[in-house]
Image 1 (tube, rainbow, N blue to C red):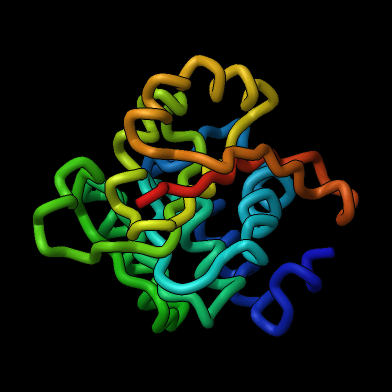
Image 2 (cartoon, helix red, strand yellow):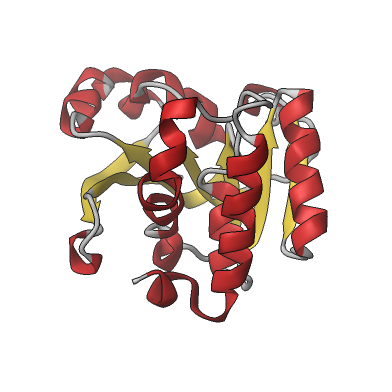
Length: 202
């Protein structure tokens, strides 16, 4: 299962998981209740998105590196940018990128809403986010980061369809179309991960 998701880089994934388990609670990256299920609920859950990626990808609100750093491990062919406003988190993310020798990652300390017009990074081919905020708040932060025809891949819980309905006006305003909810993980015997996938139109 994990071998299919990470391939030859599974030891990098295990090393990152061990580091997150050792330091995550102290740094405020994860709660103590998450430690026993860190690998199954968080690492593998994040890695399920890896086959959907291509090109230049931004992960908004990277925090503990979920899913962005995990995805960078699983997909060394993808250019990943971790976008996180909190300094202690970006410091930790950069230290992990350096320690693991990931040459397909850059860490940017910024709020997503400050990036358009800044001359940094943009436009991106895809944007990911996990456990950041409801869609009606998240779409205005993420859609402007994409090129015309770019793709949102937003990890959500069991109420993803309800969030889509509640965000209908925001989705129209930001020209978000072709919205679908993907259910990933069953094929690997994992708890289902829901991803809201959508296109930002020209």
